[in-house]
Image (cartoon, rainbow, N blue to C red):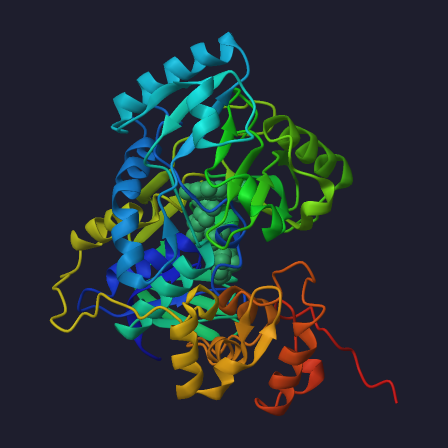
Length: 484
Ligand SMILES: Cc1cc2nc3c(=O)[nH]c(=O)nc-3n(C[C@H](O)[C@H](O)[C@H](O)COP(=O)(O)OP(=O)(O)OC[C@H]3O[C@@H](n4cnc5c(N)ncnc54)[C@H](O)[C@@H]3O)c2cc1C
């Protein structure tokens, strides 16, 4: 029998990675098991990238409390771990007096939840804050922010690793049993054991819980589709702009959100699905996204669109009900040692850090969480050549000539940055692992120019066979064989 970990965390999304980092502060052993070939492959890599302020959530709910707390902590965590973050604020746009009335209620709820600075604004102010946005007025939330969700997960996971947490990717949990206060977790890489299990499996949290006989949860997947606009449209908007939310639509409405990298995203829709892995986008919904976004910001044009994607919400409320279900974060009485995180939909990313504190508090009741004296709180951010001044770029090129060769022309990513991305701490070698670390292939040409160069590096510098190169792990191979 191998090592018995103190804690096994199932799932390396934002929540699993934040918990891993939090637990790495203490003298315990922790393992993260993730079914995919990299972190952030689930909902956490497929969302809006907004640090919510907490006014949308039901007063008194865990969601509201953790969102407000998460918003307060987010900037500090991003600065500690080198995660791109920008406090943009956010506007909710009213189209008529009835919308303004709804906004008054939202401000009241926000105040009750502990959000600061929310206020109504008139048409002139909305035009000054977000020129080009329509509407008769709206609400300003000064504490809303945007951030890089991939880097959040990568940074938390890397920092957790630096502080002693083990990660096992491509390790789908297929069964769990419990004997004599020890859990035995079956994966394709073998059976791992632990004293505690933290179930942060996102869309699959109900199935993980059921593996341990706690089968009273059901997750209803609800898809949200997005468009991505080219950076040429970045001047059109630099603050997230949302419509006034309508009850029962399953989301916050189609909004326009600038990303920290200078694109604008449009979305998300809200459609219930049977299959939690159905990441397809559909023409009818895409048309709706464009027309609703154009109603908010008429200057956007179809020629600005460079891509699309979707994410899936792990909802506890069944379709048609439009109801509210709070996060469930608890140690299960029916299965001591199992900490379940159920229904961590929006604002789950904003809440990830306070959720990690809740989990460590639950564990503290059972195990000694004595702090490590050598915990390293900081992580060095990767070089982002495109964000540096000309002088800084020249200096870097002198230290390493690979900074002098641009591989991704749309996003100005250098050969050295691609190399750093390939040599990541997790050994993740898929194209998307490189994309989300270096931001290559994300521009208007969608990898038309740089993909061949990245593949060439993987084959010649890293000795991968062409058939081993995948977009997102098994089943997404780029090459099937030789043509001659
Ligand atoms: C369209 C959309 C927009 C959103 N926008 C925002 C926003 O702007 N701001 C915000 O705060 N929140 C937002 N959210 C919510 C937020 O994205 C989620 O709450 C958060 O990402 C949940 O993180 P997680 O770690 O719980 O789940 P996930 O990121 O889904 O991670 C779960 C992980 O578990 C793994 N896993 C599953 N089953 C197994 C298994 N059997 N074995 C091993 N691993 C397994 C999965 O592969 C996955 O990596 C949005 C969500 C959606 C869908």
